[in-house]
Image (cartoon, rainbow, N blue to C red; front, side):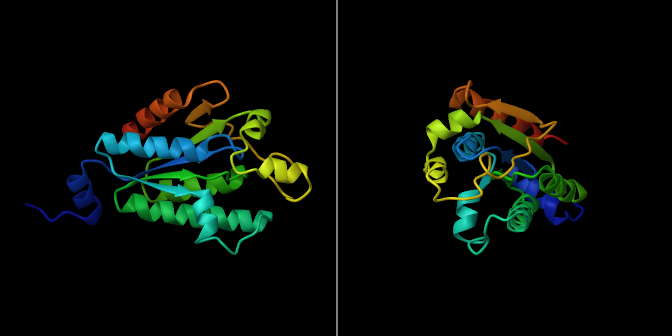
Length: 193
């Protein structure tokens, strides 16, 4: 039997290949909730996922970064590097990150594709009013009270993806339906080719 390279050996062992599912959207749109739901769905399908959550990154790997455009760009670069390492190890990396700038998301996608890693960008689209009503972390409340500056969607820009692989309207669709659609696209890229 010919010797397998590391990627092929991992794929044979796991039964799927590594990939990246990148969830982007406003704060409170539901990215982290959907990422955890997708994680459970993939595990139930015997596909090994790993979640790269923006909040967790900010408590660890990116804890010293602020919210300037340069720091946001660096945070996205770090998230992409981590997702790339996970995907190259054979996992489906689920990135849940506001990632407000299209150019930064495009650069991350370019890096994945250059390494042959399947990648899908998912726009978690909820109107700002819905995100503000949910406000799970109290960010909008803090920003409205003047105690938080630079909140994406209020006083810092968010550039929606012009052509996402999938758009989930979490203000209209229920969580289970969104997770099911995410699971379908993630399984398709992890089990293809």
